[in-house]
Length: 106
Image (cartoon, rainbow, N blue to C red; front, side, top):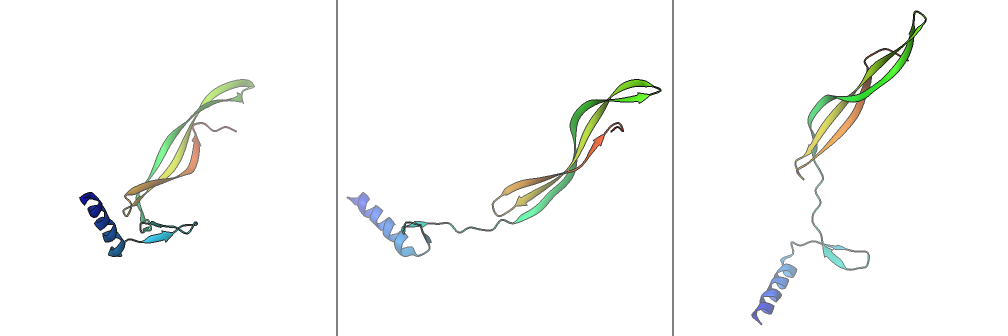
């Protein structure tokens, strides 16, 4: 019996406290909601990273002879790291700056 009275007192405290916000759902009922805060994204770090893009072979002609060479490909990527101090989250944004080949060819 005393468990029911404690539970009833807790429910009455929540109902009459007035600090709990309720939102109306589509079906007309209500449910408690938390206050949503806007994220505060700030740039934490910016750097350029070189990523190996593999290699490929290409052929060319020199002195009427056909030659084959290997070309190394490197991608230059700019990475920006953002930090949100309100929700303690991070996110990154990557952008391809250029693609570099070790040998000139078409």
